Image (cartoon, rainbow, N blue to C red; front, side, top):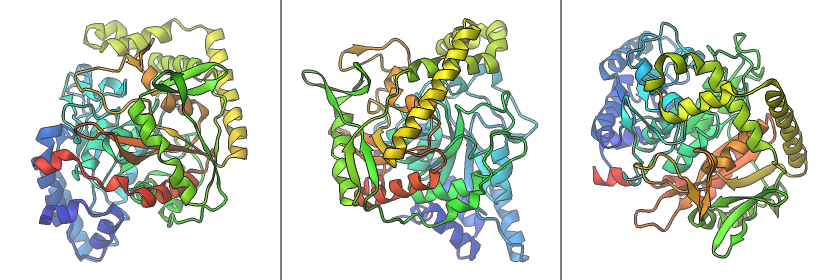
Amino acid sequence: MSAVDEIVFQPARKLARLLRTRKLSAVEVMRAFIAQVERVDPKVNAIPTFLPEQALGAARRLDNAHRRGKAPGVLAGLPIAYKDMILTKGIRTTFGSPVYRDNVPEVDHAIVERLTAAGAITLGKTNTPEFAAGSQTFNPVFGATLNPHDLTRTCGGSSGGAAVAVACGMLPFADGSDLGGSLRNPGNFNNVVGFRPTPGRVPYWPTIDAWASLSVIGPIARSVDDAAFLLSALAGPDPRSPISLAEPGARFARRLERDFRKARVAFWPFEPLRVGSRGMRLAGNEMVPVDGRVAAVIARQRKVFESLGCVVEDAWPDLSGADEAFQVLRALGFVQRYAPLLEMHRDQLKETVAWNIEEGMRLDGPRIARAMALRSDLFRRMREFLERHEFLVMPVNQVPPFPVSQPYPDEIEGVRFATYIDWMKTCYHVTVTSHPAISVPAGFTDDALPLPVGLQIVGRHGDDFGVLQLAHAFEAATRAGERRPQVLQES
């Protein structure tokens, strides 16, 4: 193992301790991560805005302050590169759109304020699809981000650059956001952890709708423990966010070990869709198709939860209506944020972005009211289901990483899709319920270049810590997340 690898693949929590005790300097750490970005990123395109000199200057100032006796923050000296949807004062933020190619914000997002105050040092910005629309990270400003396990495949999205950077040791952890699966899906596709917290756990400011709760911010990391460590700095109340939860983030710095004997776990079973194909039942006769390679990896994990002492039962919640609620409320959000762009810059918008805005503009009061009522009832149904079962285990989404040349899958197992996000219903149906959910590495397919498959654990509303605890126990039992990307072996 090289000297650079000795640093960049250290657990983030341990690296922070080495920095705090001055066994490593911030400059040493930053130089190692800069070297890793320079070595690996040209192959994967995860950090298109890269600020090595700025980061080194901040590291020198931090080392000087530490020598003078100033107590370091919990993340002091650790690099961070923010998703290119997050406002960073004085640093270009494009949202992956040519409309904002040269946009330089005048304010920081709330999470930038928090992580900076905790001592994290900005190293750049991570790539995202245009306006974070779609779970395939490509845009006309920076191009596509590639999957480090197979460079011909997508890394997912919309926090794709973040997940790839973490998987490749270019960052110790990263922020991301999740509307329909944008933390969980790239975690799933890159063999890292992506955690969607309960809405309000991490403040969202500035935003055009302070009450919005479909999209949340959360951590991406190589381990569940490091995801919890970053969440401890991200989480906590903020008076500018009226839905922010009062519980301080420090709770997530605690140890995650727990005895899961007798914990009730619902394992969403696969059923024959037809001969030779698999699906998952949503309600009544409605079925969601699942790629057989994903189903094979997930089905094998049942015995892992049984080995932890969990009481595992075949069960699933009634999520009928989730599709309608999500599609309507998502379209409404696109109108809120981007409607003026449709009139002024229609020729510069990705087709799926324009479609989302136009769908929102066709909405009327009764449709929006129905979607809000459906969402409320979906929350009730999931809450009642998780009173009987403490956790729900299911796929993150329905396919493994697909070719990067393909904008999105249009069918699974011969079932054609109506929209460009139908292949990730197992993610966005959970979104609508407002319950915390995590993607944790579960294994690999049998492809020539094996592709990562993640497992999704859903927990009770507000029980983010419990979800992290079960994911941590599963991770320790499988050790699937320890497998490093193929691109590192070729470097």
